[in-house]
Each structure stands twice: as C-alpha cells, then as structure tokens.
Length: 122
Image (cartoon, rainbow, N blue to C red; front, side):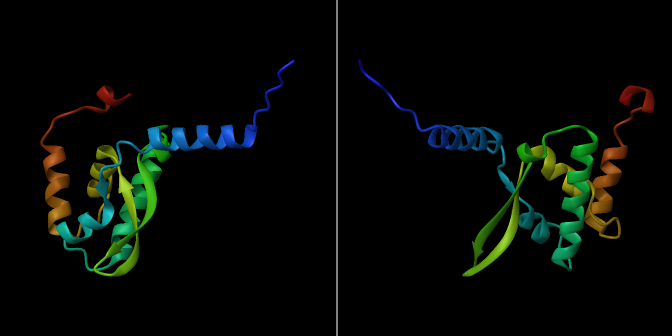
C-alpha cells in the first residue's frame, strides 16, 4: 500500500500566494506618482485621497485587495511607503484629491462634463 501525505499548510500557502497574484495582477500604478504629477504639498494629502478612494470601493462592494496594495519602494535610495493601484483605484484617488489643488479640481470638472442622472446610477 502506498501512502501519500499532503502538507495542507504548504498547499494553503501556495493557494494564498496564487490568489494574491491573481488579485494584484492589475495593480499597475503607484500612488506616489500622483504626488509628483499633481504637485501635492504633503504626502498626507495624498494618503487622505487614497483612504477616501478605499472607502468608495467598500461602498461599491468592490474588493479592496484587487485595487489597493500597500507596498514599500526604494525611491532615490530611501525606503518609502506607497500604494500599488488598479486603474479604477488610480482614478478614484485622483477625483478624491483635495479640490483646492487646481489639477484635482480640473479633473473633477472634466468628470462633470459627462452628463448623467442619479437615475442612471441607481
């Protein structure tokens, strides 16, 4: 008789790693790139926009882990915290930025140029 043992912890870890790679495959953007692009004065301003965007995803019942991933990156020899973002998250972070920022306000205005009614949303 041949007995095969399976290490379920390893199998579960493998499945978890596979699930993580599937969930994060579309995270092609970095939040700190928006910091530079939108000329934010403070990283906290960007973090507030990220947190608002995460709350929007939760309100829409989107899987946050498929759109946001906290990471550490090496920028100019310094280890900094950042977020990897999906295209949806990237856009949500932009429109949830500080409206006092002229570039953010311009993007928000562009969104309004596309007519919609609340009836379309419900």
